[in-house]
Amino acid sequence: MDLGTFGAILKYAIDIEGGAAGYYDSLAALAPAENKAQVAEMAAASRKNKQVLERTKRMEMQEMILEAISGLDTANYDIAFVAPSEYKAGMAHAVAIEGKAASFYCDSASKLGFLGNVKRILEKMGKEREARSAKLRSLQ
Image (tube, rainbow, N blue to C red; front, side, top):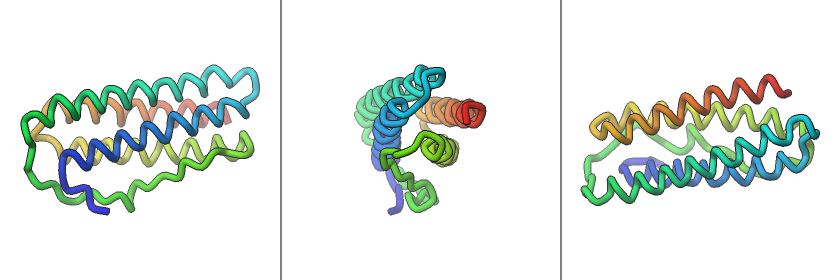
């Protein structure tokens, strides 16, 4: 599906964060004791990101942004948030989730350059996702 509007991009980002929070909650339940807190922190970070995105959408939508956006398609960023059944495989999938989310945020930020505040938020989330991916790789 083409993400051709500001609202569609932020809705997709909100869905990513909601799905990631649930996924990390499930993964934390499977995690060994030494990794549980770190995985649970990722779930909490995703919930916080979701709140930031929802607030941003409310604030920026008041301006009725109608500028068309092209070049973003969900097919490039689709993420399966199926609850993991095993910790090791779940961690490998989490790395993939973070990579796709980081790509989505970076690509979206470049398309929304006309909205400076939104661009900064998406760039920051993209960088956080890249850092989370590296952290997850170290926990595997």
